[in-house]
Image (cartoon, rainbow, N blue to C red; front, side, top):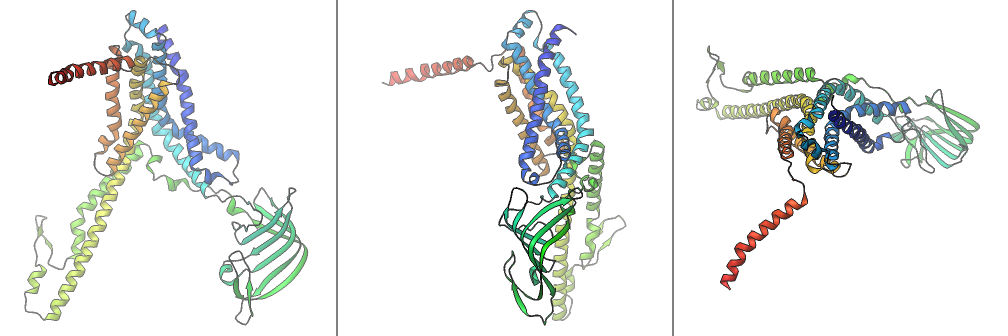
Length: 497
């Protein structure tokens, strides 16, 4: 390897690693901000969050690779141009294309790595990450009781505490214990206590409530002969036919399971249907299956509609539909008015049934076609995301040579602009494919095609040592336009005057 190649590669890998780390971190923060309401007040360990961040870090790698390749290649050649090293290379007879060769091979390797990562690792990471995220979202919040407010998340209980002390002691406790009938027939048990405390046992699987110096009211019967009483509850006063027993206590203990608050792992199989959880082989198989189902349903449309027709429907020996006797031919026969009315009613009913059948089959076929396009689109994106790494290099390297600016200033701005362009074109192509306006290959490859043309254009400008982004070029251009305008229209005004 020549010293030139080592110099260029050394200037590439540093920004590449930094950019990858920053982009992955930004995407993780985006996930944290988006799901922050689902994370707070959950009794989750560090291991759960570590697994979630690990899986989502893997998910963001295919998205971060094109941006990292673009920025690092732009910075590498920008630094070479800023310190006149590219000028020295050109004076030594080394072209810009030869200087780009080592990084081109690196970008090619990154594209191949991105493809295999996208096909093998990303589906597994998506399945693990989103299933874990679903489990965290469905996990109940931990027991957080606020002063003076009823807490109702513990199944079967409504708890209110007047004051909480630093040592964990609770002052002025009111507990409504109810069953499924509580909101119709009132609470089955009401406990008032001067003080108490709450803590968990057996690795947070059970909650213990210890109460001191209080009274326990219990609903013993709910018969029609019971006298009506009014019970105050968190939902308001409720009338119930009850006989209460009253018991005073100095110490009373309740133990309840906290199993509903723990995180339960769901079966990952229920998430495997999504296109993000499949590799190319699975996507191809699913898309072909949906296409075959679509074609089979279309073939059976005529046969399936036969049951909704009242005229003689028959199929010829040549497998074509032959005309039978239509309803109009039946109405001209000498039949009674009541029979004609019945025939018309039956006809209307058959027509409505046929219309409903047609609508349902049309929606079914559209859904099948849309789902097949969705899986085919994801299959193409396995390739497009990999190729975009190479295309981003073809944009970044010549742009760096043209701009001649290193560091994280101008290169970061230019990289973000092209990355946003890639993102917008990709989403727009996907939208047009799902709406049926474009074929799947055209919509999937639209963004890469546009950016590839941009890369070829910048390479041509870099080879000719273009001053495309220099301010004085455009100042001189506008001055020439202004001078031509004045020389042409200024003289005519003088002649008229």
